[in-house]
Length: 246
Image 1 (cartoon, helix red, strand yellow):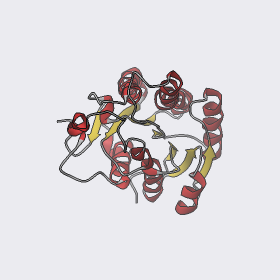
Image 2 (cartoon, one colour):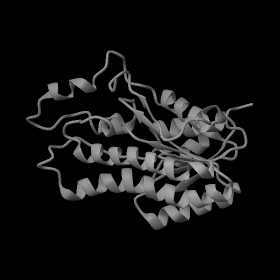
Image 3 (cartoon, one colour):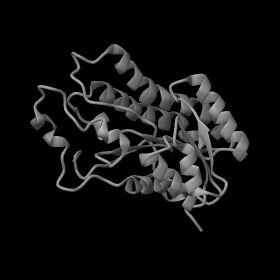
Image 4 (cartoon, helix red, strand yellow):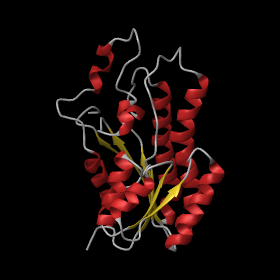
């Protein structure tokens, strides 16, 4: 018996990194998984096997998200869990950041998280409740240089999570945030080189004595908070960061 036996879950960002690891973990725990991403989701499904399935979706497009959620729910016959893991980011001096890049990061990380919540919530309400797990970041809890858009988007995810948890707690819907620190995923490569002229010492506070997390370690947290073992957790932001935020 797995922690998530019989549960029906949508996982965004399932093509790689934490999203892929979470989809694999959920399936291993007995959930049926809709793997959502712009690319790579089918590879994840092939690795999982069983009745997992892939859906392509740009979560920054509200109409595309609505269609994706409706398709996933129709295929699975309901919805119990939504995991918002898709995200983007990069380092850049704020005075040089193109406005279009700022908008793009917020569109994916913050707007996209709201859109999936928006269109999943009616299905969760119809089913009598469920769980939403949003991916925040330590960057949404503390300042981080050269990543104003990313910090703003993840700070928004933190408050979106808390607002939804409060709004829907009487409807048996839990909303939880996971805030990873450095994790060995594709997105970390976007933050691998600091901008020209930047002082590397400014990111010393983001460094820990321990190595970066493996995506599977973050996936374990998703599985726990989404399961009945996490039934008393809502509105919380769980940091998994090797001690960056203490």
